[in-house]
Length: 287
Length: 189
Image (cartoon, rainbow over all chains, first blue to last red; front, side, top):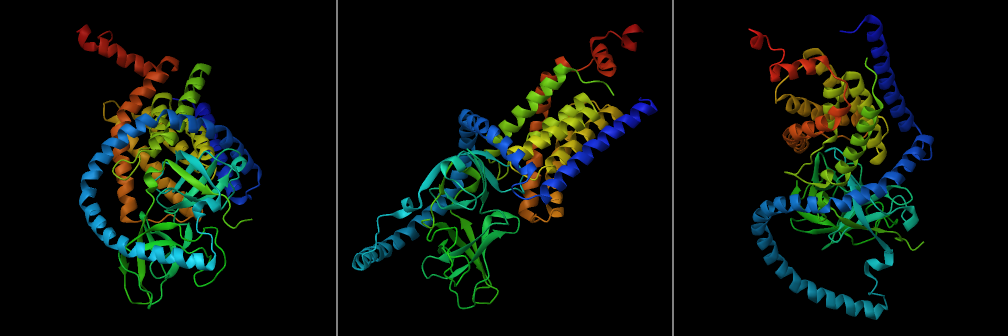
């Protein structure tokens, strides 16, 4: 089919391409975040992000149409679960309202400001402009960056709860590592009793977060709400990049309950597969 | 090795940019049975099938580099994988010249498998956590099935887009002649 000279030339070109890929990989992996390849990547990312954002807006009707079909099927299965949850929540609301009233009264006595909420963290609203297609990758691109006050390590939330943190910020766009990424970690706290523990994504299942290790005496039960503890290490008061009391999710089960090896499984509150708008908390520590 | 015409180069470039942007901005955000479709390896494989192994390899390298830039991933990972996909698809076409409607499906499924499993393997080699579990295997299987279903329309679209710029391949010309009856030995008999 090809003469020997052509075959040699073809092999040389192929070898060069493979070598170029390997050199890129090694050089990128070895250099710091301020290195040449990272800078080039940041530049390209800044250029491509607005295009991605425009395409994301333009293709929204298409996404909505496909999503509507999927949602209709999912909704049927969710109705029964949601009814059970509603009944349980009605009971909790009654006791919660009493606690809230008491909380307001006590805070007034202590002269604490109770009207700040999340606004104190100066949230910047962002649109999700891209998602990694690989099943092993847990990140999204958003359309705000350093020009909007966004920096690396800032927490990202949506209206349901914690979403992740910023791991890369360019001028007008950023990359967010989701809480379903095995490399992500946050100290959580069971809302009802303050039990604390580190939370990571479960092995291979992005919809399952694991709170572990926990002590034998720590009481965690199914349906308990888990929020961020606001500290770096459990049982210490070092400040975390994540503010206190951001909802992480709800406990779906506890393995080895009452043992030293017990661990709690948590379903994330945020629907990480269908994020559209998120908020970056740009001023967590008031600095 | 046939030289690539500027027209083919332009069409391949435009196809790559549009594919990656549509994938990241729209298709990647659609959840289907808990997983996502990924048309990028399908497009690279189709380009390899239509343009040959070396053009496929070069195209895969370039598209992979763009993917890594746009998703802020480790540079070189996607380039290496898509290079293998483009080269493999082109080589299969050159050596076996496979025909039939199922070819894009099989090649698309194989390309998706290489893209996902290769990504996991490279992540593992680079020391990044790449946990394997039944849920992940299920996700991989679902993605391969979705991509296999998308392979035929994607291949059709890529062929339509690239055909005007492709050099006239003698094998393709011969097949065309057979289907129109021009060179068929049966028609001469």
